[in-house]
Length: 206
Image (tube, rainbow, N blue to C red; front, side):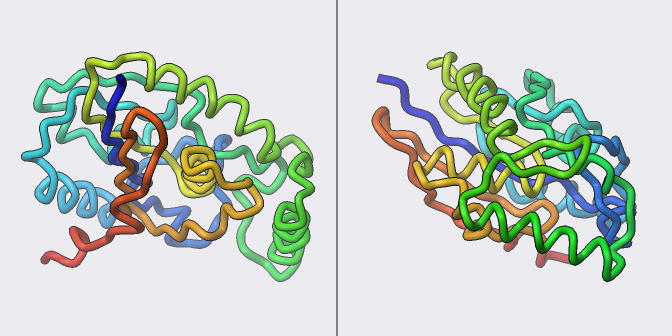
């Protein structure tokens, strides 16, 4: 019977996060000073966890967020299925009243079950689900990896948590997050259970 504990974190802060600029799969940004500080705080809090494997997205901000663990010699793998949702023509745009209104319209559609809706050139939740299921199959296909660290992205993480807990994707906004927040999820061989929800305690250290 496969049993696993997944430590799922969002990447640390980037300048685009700080500036409120739309940042999805189409923006491969670096962590800023605050993001690097957050990465250090997370490492200090969880460096003694015996992780068997690390999975990250193909965007460098995820690797930078858990680089201290990689520096320990832990094996890691990049999975495109963990990439952020692509926001299409809105990638790199600032949060103006117009862009906020457009986002609210799409979010409302998603909330109402229209999960194939997407921005021009972007991805829908249903499209992200397909690649996340592939990534999850890879992660779960290694029974020897009992304790796994996953670093990914905000919207994508919300969708993945829905999949893990068998919730409809319309409930994605029930999983709040901030930069380098932790969700700890345990798989008992039958189902996934969130045992640590939106934990940011490690970020409160000096």
